[in-house]
Image (cartoon, rainbow, N blue to C red; front, side, top):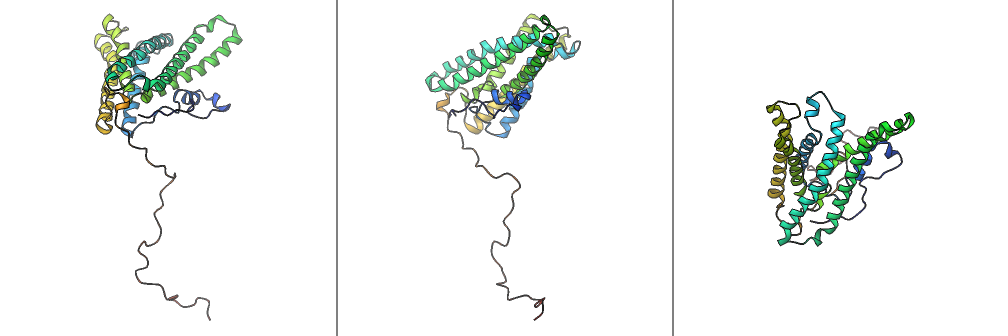
Length: 287
């Protein structure tokens, strides 16, 4: 797998861009060095996996029991940050140990460091947003107004960034194409298991609690398995093989001009009746 070194920001940012936090999030959390999807099928599976991961992060029960609980969502965001901070490096470390027979860590030093920076940047954005909402009531009216505007901007920024990062999972696809689905599966299960072990169904009945708690991790696992199976069968990318030992990927399709394709005009075989001998209707302007 080749590593594309380049500018961090994925899109060009201007002063007007900062009025649109989702555009800033797309530029910051989807850098240029993150590889594009190999085919449309993998991209569609990734989008479904993103939806399942969002359900696990927010917690469906907050919408079922008494409506949307904003404070509980903030608690979930902090919990998710802690889980990501410890679980992502741990899972990648386990895979590096698995890959030790077919490659070295030194070969992946650049991609691993960039993925770690993206992880820390996202966790910092989450904690900063939560802190803004927590200290909101400790200031006067004018300061509260400013904090509200900044907090709303940060909330949209974090949500849009989470959508981007759920697909590429902190750019770990540049390390190995199978790491994003693996990390998504491990993360959603780790966030669901404590509720199952403690029996905390958040006020739901046993059936509804099990369905809503297990729904997201089961869905994410199924989609991740399909995604890794597609990568293995179509491109020969296996999770247990070091990225340096994987077969080369097919080249991207050649660029083409946008717009509808215009077929060639005229008869490609020439005039089957020979050259015309003049106007068959005579001279329309007289002699």
